[in-house]
Length: 503
Image (cartoon, rainbow, N blue to C red):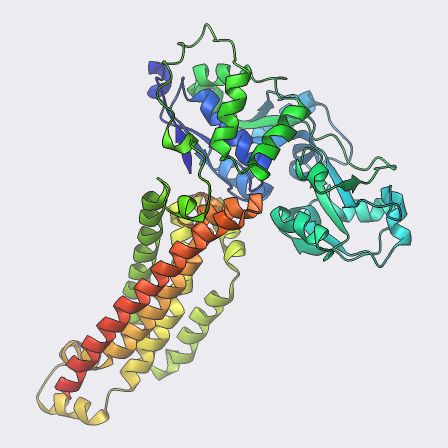
């Protein structure tokens, strides 16, 4: 996550940090950075990048985990408020108020949905032509497929018989270019439209509403951060569609970091200072976060490597530790009480099958965003190998040694601690190793809800279709997994040697 901070007014400083969210696509990342940098001279600001789709970011906003994020009127109108017909900005504001939310600061551009195909004389030119071409392969973003104002309504309006496949928005353009799909959904401000020579299909039955970019915010945020809110208000009407296309192109085509893109636009379009807030402090030397990083090695070993590593390791250690504290007693219980064995193993097995993103989406309304729901999800996935191996290890303790301990007069607790658990330790460690290695990989999902870790680079790489950025997140995660496995294998050998000496 990126944070911006500078000389804040005393009133705003006392109210904590202004947290700005963004969705998981290029434009939202850029707008989130632009908002954070605009607010930074007036309040401590933090940008929680790429939190996910509309439902996840909205849940974070309603739970108070973020204070505002860039959204689009069409999305608020149809996806959030479920209007069948377009509503005015005033009506939307009245309906959001009971939720403690507001909409304000139209940024100046309309980024509507559209469908696009490869250019060429034989291809369709309008959406109404798609119904007569049932063989066309649709590759649409998962959110578009599920949105009320997305594929379901579009298919009904135009009578489309095709069954779309779900694709991440960041890789859809390459899939279209390589001929793997024929039709994709796009945003009208996508810079890759011209780069790939795509034809945007005419919405000849006027299905898509306007998607004017606005700020969706908590009503208390404007009161808690008055100077920062006044600064954000000066963005109203300042960002044109051409500006947004250029900023998207700078990130997706030129490979500039989101912070650099936002900083460049603000430098070229200075905002008049507000009388309600102090002037920004003099600019210091460019921070490391504003320096572009070219090449795989530069992206791996940038200034965020250690913070991301620390976040990733912390998530894994805490989750696996909690899994051991819970799973080892459960495994012992399953071994000691045959009637409960199948029930315990079935329960942890079912938990393992819950899709990770679905689990996170369920946890956000209860726990918000950040490290806590990520830890709960990782804990759930780490339970099965710990419980199963503990139960297996306990059952493999030779019966003769149990009888010998009983003959020596050891009480049940003494037999457990001094005989059975030490003998079962190699098998238990093997389960903990499996849980730890799995958690290193699974922890990358934490970035989808603002908990950091190597997944942050992976989500950015997906948004930009940047293979180097993807590898900059995947390679450290793979190295950490190998180191984890090596450390546990050493522990297993030591535990096995100790167990053989006991026998």
